[in-house]
Length: 331
Figure 1 (tube, rainbow, N blue to C red):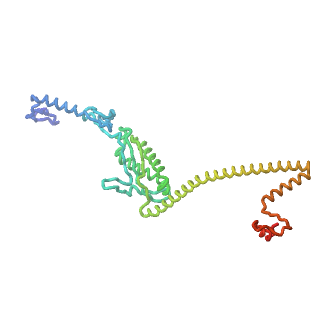
Figure 2: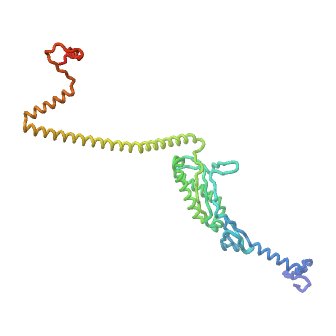
Figure 3: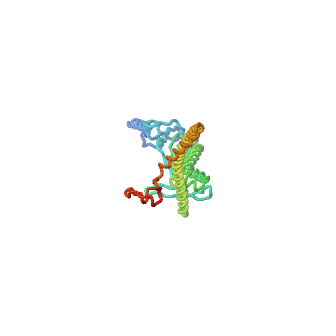
């Protein structure tokens, strides 16, 4: 705009003509329309994408979540309108606390592994955590640096659980309980963050005292194992000997009962015989006494080795071998 003096006005609002500034550019050439169509088609085609079978994808429009799509070919509006984020939702992910597995082997990380127990001892615990994604939207956008967050949570949880336990239980009988409690602690914290993650397993890979005292702890553990072995052997012996003793006791009771019945039967028989004799004696005392005497002598003589000789006999045939019997005082 002219200010009346043939130049630009004081406000600097003179007209700006692109044709004056870029006289060499020609926007009306014969190939311009085709090029524009190609660019538009290519831009629209950039919205096609593939989701793998193990993945899910989140489509965002101007930064806001629009939908979640599963495996297969899909389409979203081209950038910068829509964008896509993917994650593997069927894979079980694994993290390590206190150590790292490398191609060269296992590397220990004492700064993560060493922790204080409830009875004020130091123990080294290597821990692995397995998890999977159950809500991809929460997983992608609610927590920054998911793996680092889970690592920090797992380390904090195992320290808290170990701080409630005695070192003997940690090294021996308490491992399963510690794994379960640690998994619950990790899951509770992740749920409070809305992380969209499910912890599937927590495993104590290696639990041991510091190297300075490891031999002493091994001796204690060995003694405890011996104790448990002796207890098991004693219980096995008990389980074997008690049934045998009960069987023997039952046999003895049965034998005693049989002996009792036999003696009772004998006593009853003798009683009946005595009563019969008594009845006979009362009926004929002299005859009964004579009969009893003869029966008794019959039994005695039948069991005795006796020889009876007439005192008037002076000579006995030698073949009978009786001279020696006479000399020996036999009668």
